Length: 506
Ligand SMILES: [Zn+2]
Image (tube, rainbow, N blue to C red):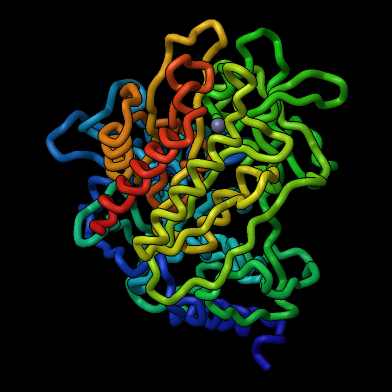
């Protein structure tokens, strides 16, 4: 039987079969999304080197017509095309759009979003950099090759898309949004699957195949055939310079001053103080995948923080939320109460703990949305520690329509004068952020500290519009008093819920 054959021809057919199984299944998140064409001369996919080429990220640039030039390509005779991303040198707002992760781009095949099932990544294959859609759920499914650089040299390299692939723009309820699809408009077939041959031919011996993750799979999860003996391509090697003996990767910043925690929290609000090997550190995250740890590491280093990635064993107390069954066609909102368990979040005036505020607000938001007929999932429903990757992966795997993370802010016990609401988004969440922010301001007397952008992990790694609300300062005199008043806390929650419902047109 073809699925059990190890011959290359059969394997390629298997790739098409697996994809066909995925595409035929309904995918909750995809239903309101459409696509519209983009002028190919106004967009470019780039392999973007990280840490001198230790690994590569996918970066997609778009040029707004008749505006300042966003990039320049150096023609080369048949070899790789080096791209100079000119936009890195100027404020490109209004002239260029830049997408650097799963919030900004995803895969779409034959009219179906596959952003939940596949993530885009650039991997080295011999003397080439290859853009793959790699399976996120069914790790035994083959990656799909989308394009390659046709050689490797220093710098930013243009990814030439394989025949049949193009970039299109996502539309939501018919309106274009700032999210790019790597799009294949025909159903996948053997000709297309043949693009994976170079990767598959390098495969290592098969590792044991795991069955689909039944306990945590959502009800809408497509059933995917598993080829039991299919070889699996080698994952990209981890970046050099750190140990890889543990199962997990811990990102930490040693505490060097009284400001370290707040400086780290400006990059990643889930960060908390702990001790590693007897040293006081701020733990920024604990990740199963090296690449995810490296993303956070890169953001911290860019903020001039002395971050480190260290090997770690699996967390003993981390909780992985389980996705319940989701009614077909439901609008799904994931509410993410920040912190929990051994991580209290920020601690403010009178020992006020952020995690308790986040829980109270999240519970009330959940009730209000459910009363309006929305299906609400939460990343934690009790006082447990949940990792950042588990939070965003949960929303992705549930095929959620929206993701809203609830936090409370802190600055310094010496600044009780700083109070107010801040609402964050990264790429596709701007309209949701503005809706929530305006609604909370209408419903409370919170000060307005603005709608802002930030590269927070849960915002960058969720594939739907996502927002993080800092509902006030536990270190602020007026906000801390508000957090101690259950009626006022409910008003914040009701404002968030109303903002979500307004966004959804409910
Ligand atoms: Zn927080």
